[in-house]
Length: 61
Image 1 (spheres, rainbow, N blue to C red):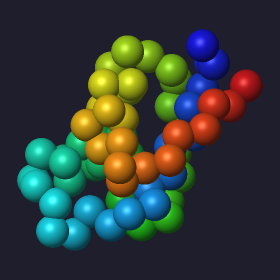
Image 2 (cartoon, rainbow, N blue to C red):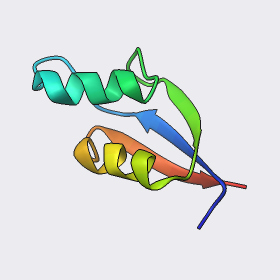
Image 3 (tube, one colour):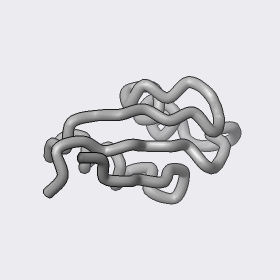
């Protein structure tokens, strides 16, 4: 398991369910194509699983 994850939004949140848009906001993603870095925790992995078709995940060491 990596220490950090880089999460990049690759698909738009427009027209998605409110819970999915709020999950993107909770991850710290505000715009399309923006990337953020988070610690690799079960909570973050769960949020990624909810919006996995909207984001790309890359492990960062």
